[in-house]
Amino acid sequence: MRSSRTAIAGPEQTVEQIAAALEGFLAEHPKAVVLEDGKVLFDMREAKYTLATEHGRCTLHLWGEDRNLVRRVSGTALRNGVLRLSTHRFGQTKPQTLELAPDKDRRTPSTREATRVKYLRVLERVLERNFDGWKPDGFRTAMDLEKSFGPAYARGSLLQGQKAWAVIAVNEEETQATVDGILTLGILWLQHCRESGNGRRLYHGLKIFVPRGTSLLTLSRLAWLNADAAQWELWELDQASEELEQRDPADQGNLTTRLMHAPNVDAARERFGESAARVMTLVPEPMREVVEQKIRSGTEMAFLLHGLEFARIRMGYAGSSFNRAEEITVGAGANETPLTEENETELKELVTRLFARRAVGGDRREPLYRMQPERWLESVLRRDVEPLDAHLNAAHVYTQVPAFAAADRGMLDLLGVTDDGRLAVIELKADEDLHLALQGLDYWVRVRWHHLQNPDAMSGLGEFQRHGYFGGVRLSAEAPKLYLVAPALRVHPATEIVLRYLSSRVEWTLVALDERWRAKVRAVWRKRSSDPRI
Image (cartoon, rainbow, N blue to C red; front, side, top):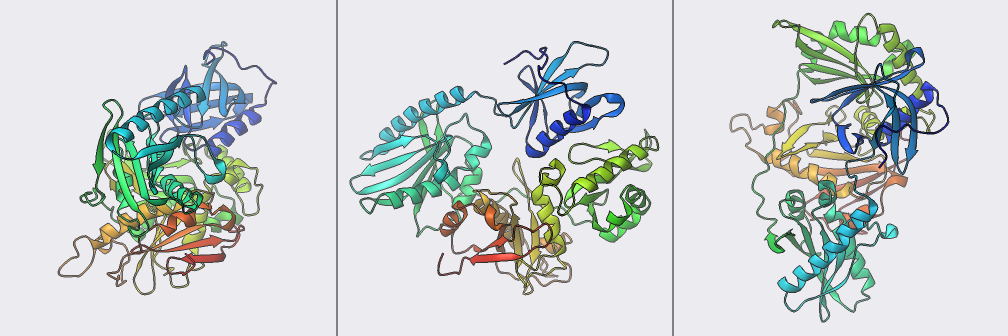
């Protein structure tokens, strides 16, 4: 890696070109990290930034919980998927280099490959030692894009005559997100083994191997797979000792999760009225009707344009006193700036540019148009959910209902209810995602769990209604319905394969939308768990 004190060679860029390169990269890579000398300084999922282009300079300000950084950026260069920034500290002419990488995994391709090849040898030894009479066969990590198999997963078979098990495994050097994706890939691998066997072998099911201590999410998913379609086994492997421990999907215990109270919307709107009016003066008058004013809590209100938050009001304390004060900040995504009298004109221009660049029918090459497409889709469906199912109650649609489970924070896309009182979990994807089915299942499991918890003996109200949701609705005791929603050309082929292996206890509907959903939501086809074709 080049030294952080090396300038980036290349054609001179204008400040507008530099700013566009930065904004575009962050729009495309929401999980980006900022590095200096190979060390991660900021994770952009948590950090904030501002980008100023005044006086012929592009100034980048980054801050988080434990550090603050301000640099002038004089150039950018995209190399091997990493955006390299030539930066200058104030008062210094010697350039330094910051790097924006798409994610935290900074291992070189050769290092990753060596780790995976070594793991294959460990895995085969473990299988031979622990499954007497069964022979490991055909294990590899090679990428197969046609079938969605990536190199992070070791896959093969255990054979005993005509009997067989599909096997998939992941090593301890991979990210937790990769570990959590193993069940989707495992189901696809099992299906591939069954189809390619031509009836010569009977594949009983799937054995899954994950690093020790990483199985929680996979375990919760396994409990909702169809035991008649296949047998399912989950094992944890300690690579250092090469010891195995089998995990039982029935042994999950209670989900460590809780719901937050729904805020009192009317009271919050009254409380924030004056500040909200000030925010709306920043918005071009013809566009004010498309702004969504969303109460996040009793102390926070957000302003959204097609799902993208561009301003917010927060309650805090004034100075060192206990007097409550409201703070208004403006900016898209992590780019957040307090609104003051001095910068009001500048921020009004920023908001005007945002509304011009993120408009229905806008330029698809524009980063702000492409940013957070699922939030855009979510905002459209919040206003009109009936195209998904005419029986969904448009008056009760909640978004981002927080539920916490262990160290994982699960955020629902949309939570609604049908006319007959069935809860409806609506999982959205604006782009192709092979994990759509199981991520929707995760949210469904949590909603179901909360729905079954401790109904009040006196009122009969369940946990959601005691927390302020679905007021005046008589909720059914039946399990929630699951809706999986994506544009028709963005429904990954893996989705329907995975859905075939879900338990019949999960009632699901797969809804494909017209690609022009930004202008008008229209379902072009639906498939249901009750459909005989599935």
